[in-house]
Length: 106
Image (cartoon, rainbow, N blue to C red; front, side, top):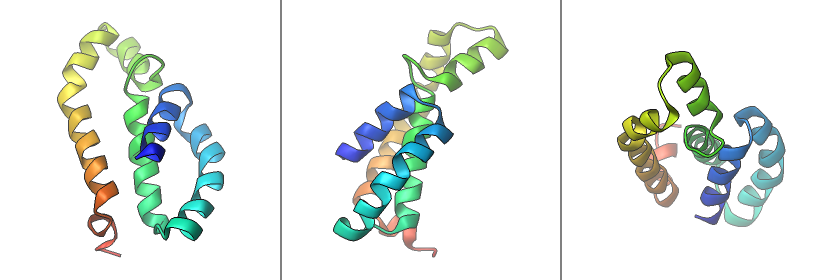
């Protein structure tokens, strides 16, 4: 859960691709060797965290891009996104606690 929270914060301040390049080479070997986390599971968790961070303020780049493209204020978009952000956060917690949900189809 600490990794989820830190990836969420990283996703809020850094672009997704840059965060992947910076974080995954450091965390993936630790996750595989010490905690026996499947690389596919880890990839799903990282991507969901970074996308969730991309859409939340204060620095969420996706939020401000959507605001600029649609002409609506960012806080109005955030209010409309709340149910979806909560759903993604709940799915993220569920996938973190039950990795079989991610790796069952492999």
